[in-house]
Amino acid sequence: MTGGARGLGAAHARRLVAEDAKVVIGDVLVKEGQALVEELGARNALFVELDVTSEVSWTAAVARTEEVYGKVTGLVNNAGLVHRCPIEELTEADYRRVIDVNEIGVFPAPRRGSATSSRRARRSPAARTGTRTSPVC
Image 1 (cartoon, rainbow, N blue to C red):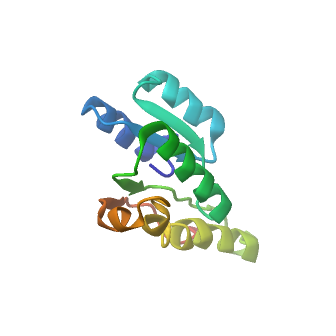
Image 2: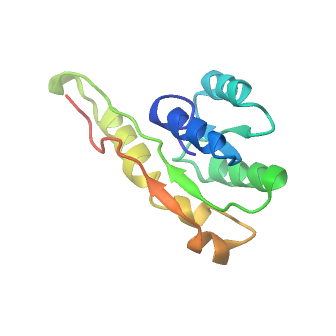
Image 3: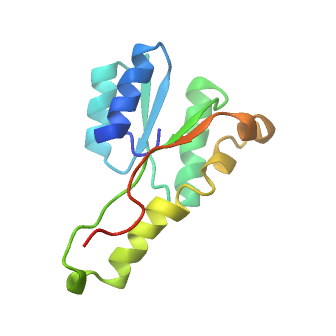
């Protein structure tokens, strides 16, 4: 579950755990992610620090997931951000960060879903939730 530490991602994680799923919460929000794992219980959930724009971060997150739970069987692409500001204050760096997270970060996610079982990973369920895909000014 990318972007799983709060909001819609946390709601998805809670529902999945309620349905007896094991959930890996990937997010850059470490404290919030760890708190959610405490709420859900360590038997049901695992937190991994994950920056969806970083190949190194994805590799580490998938490796940790497979170490704890085995092969990846599904992926919810929930990570996303909105940058609210007056248009004259929006910088190119702000804009690029939104695009990197909301667009580029989700493109290769299913491909990264499992380094050890890439054929099965391509057939694993993947979902994209409705985060805005551009800056809001």
